[in-house]
Image 1 (spheres, rainbow, N blue to C red):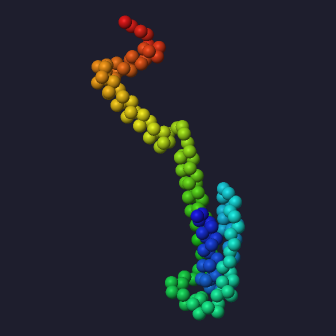
Image 2: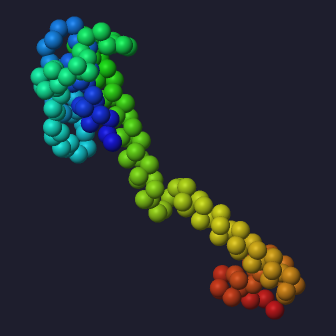
Image 3: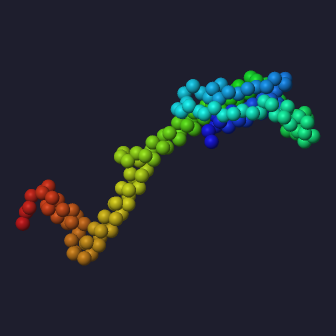
Amino acid sequence: MKLSILTTLLFPTIATAFAPTRTAFTASSSALSSSTTENARPDLPIEYEDDDAEFGDDEDWITENVPGKVVMNEIDLAKQVSALNQLEEKWRKERVYKEYEDKALLGWTPQAEMYNGRFAMFFLVVGLLTEYWTGVTIPGQIEEMLRVGGFIDVDM
């Protein structure tokens, strides 16, 4: 779940419950999202503003003297939203880079290095088995492959 969606869902509740005044802080997804986001976020329904009206008659609905209540003003809340947006952008860049690296087929990628190591181990074993069965050393096998391939002259 994206961090901005989480902040969109959490901050209206926090701001309404913890603000020194009882004014509701409506957090729209455009206000909380950074301007450099990759994809447009879907509008999420925020139904937290009228929870007091809906559940106010319930005796279990507590809005005053809540244990662990932290009072935050709008400036601190805006700083927190700004910091969360920066973290979201940093994590988005890391995710995009990791996706790019996972999809890359050529170059110095972890997948290419793993394949290179596996092929090297396989052909080393093949070379050792060929040396055991034929008596031709690994450098002799390489020389024979270069002669057959036409890279060096045939000297008999």
